[in-house]
Structures are given as C-alpha cells and as structure tokens.
Length: 286
Image (tube, rainbow, N blue to C red; front, side):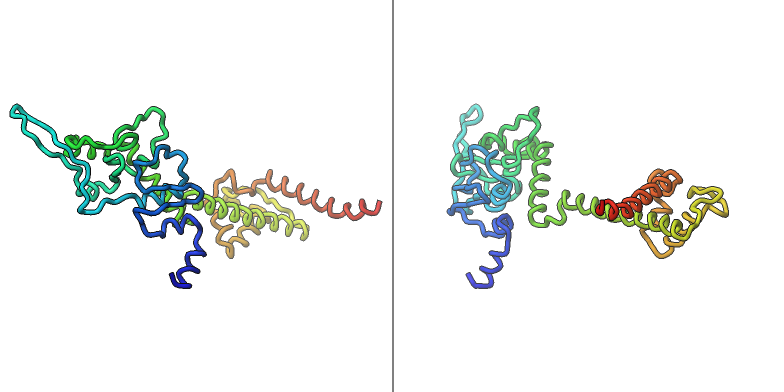
C-alpha cells in the first residue's frame, strides 16, 4: 500500500473504511466492535448482536460462490414411473434475485436483507430465507415459487429500504433523514430569530424616537391608510430583507408576532431589561 493510500485510509472513519474494503471470502472481518469470523450468513446464530457497521459490511462482502462451485443438489423421484431428477441450487438465482445469498455451511439460501434487518412486528413470523435456509428447490421459481413470493412480501421490501437508508446514512451523513431534519430545524430557528430581532429593533426604534407604535387599525390585514408607525417601519425594513418580507406576506396570521398583544409584551420585556441594566450597577455598590 502506498503512503498516499495509507494516509487516505487513516482519514476515514471506521464504518466508511469497512465499506471501502474489498471483499475477501477467507479473512476475518472486524466491524466496529463486532467481530465476524465469517462472511457466511449461515454461520451467524444471533443477528441481534451484530452492529449496523458489521451488517453493512456483510451486505457488501457476503459469501459468493465461484462459477465452478457445486451448490446444493439432491435427487427426487416423481411420477408414477418413479423417474429420478436431480435438483440443483442455480447460480443464476443469485444474479436474478440480488438479495439472495448462498451459505455453504447450511447448504441453502437466505435473503440477506431480511436476515440482517428482520421484521420488528411481533405479528410477523418470518420463516424460510430468514430464520431457516431455503433448500426446497422443487418450489423455488415460478409465480407462486418461494423466491418470487418472498420478493413480494411487505417485510422484505421494508428490509431492503432500511438497508439502503442505513447505507446512505453512512456514506452521506449530511443527506440522512436525521441530518436533513436537523438542518431544516436549524434553518427555521435562524429565520425565526432573525424575524424576532427585526420586530424588536422596530419597537426599540419607535421607543427611542418617542414615536407611537399603533395607528387607527394596526393589524396586517387592515386596508386602513394609517396602520401605525410600527407596521410601517416593518414594511420599510422588509423592502431590503427577503426573510422579513416573506414572513409578513405569507406567514401564518397567528404567528407573525406583530399584533398589539405581542407589541405590549415585547415593550414590557424591553422595559424590564432596561430596569435591570440600570439597577444592577447600583445593587453591586450596596
């Protein structure tokens, strides 16, 4: 490994490093505190003890049989003539159903998504492909076959979505649902703080200049020619402030913070602040 490659790998967090590793069917996988001694799903007895990093690593690095490897096969006898047929676990199934993985230990197939992210609803009782390996080759394919039927299950589709969301959250944490919600809440907080500062500044300005705040009708829905100095000042400020302009034009009427009740409350808070600021130095000399 070159110095540049080493430096790059050291800068990655453990989960990202796991996802960037190349698959190796014969090496031990250590995943952020959870050690997987195999990449064969069939050897895992309790998936609940595996952390999310190990699960994502196993999704990428699960066991893949070589094209020449002989998979599960057995002979069955059918018909009145008792003819013998050999049924074989087909390599093509692993390609057609990208969620299907083969376990050489238990000689059967599993749905890697449902196995690693099993349904949490206690009313759902998963069986073949999840809790037990798929090895009933006679009923594998077809419209009502085990593989097609499993792909249509709701809990299977949920497991696929959960796995994809988990992978996306690790690869692009800034685009995860939690991150997007946090960013949206942060933006909303910043906008509301900015709007409140504008409203307080307008009240303070009117107070300093000894200007009356209200006019004949001081609500934003009024068509009166004189709605008061406070609202007129906010309109003037909004001409050069897109956030305030949007708030005054399309903000909810019960959350615009411009009513006479809010004005009186803010005036009282400002007055209390000024009193404290004036008397605090005097109290310190007592």
